[in-house]
Image (cartoon, rainbow, N blue to C red; front, side, top):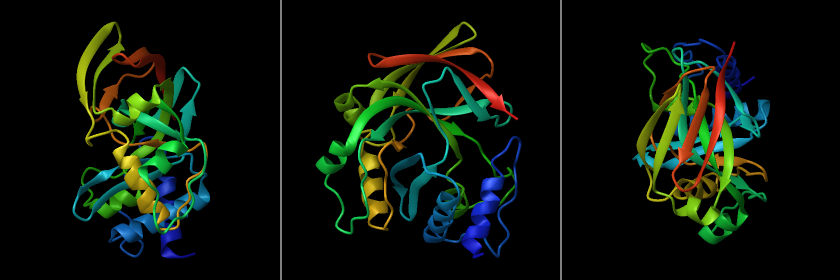
Length: 250
């Protein structure tokens, strides 16, 4: 077993309730983006990849890319691990691939990538911090651990052309009879931008994207802390809304 595989198994084992661990042992701890991506690749060999998260690179030497192993859809109940006692989620757009995009050293055009998208949806990234607050984690540590992702919920379909260009949206979140109205702004100029970058960055590295995989590209309002066991309605103004209940995994 190589160090990347050992690290992958250790990080996967931490995906359970209440786990807040130190950084990996120095013998298997990643020290670069390439090593972190190698650990992600070993994780993908152990668990089927059902989706991806991404964002345009936020700074020199930093990339936001991670496989997602749990995607929930067609359900009114979202199951996730509590993080500090709450359900932590990020409101996003999910792009569902209708056909595969294989390794391509030359990259894909925007048109080729957009044509491969079958549908677009409201979505939630499910968040879980697995490093202890007092750990000395660095960017490569978080990248190897899939950037605090524990899964994704895929909600109702929205218009594809609108979703591609979406940059701002008014959000409303209703829980326990109270409604928060929030101004949502995507971290990139368009919701599609991170996906185009992701496909080209990863396929040039030999990674394949499969039909049915769902790609999220950044939160419109950062992390929202939600209560468990109460009906919750989330709406994107003029697009769609849904009602779910968050259930804590144990």
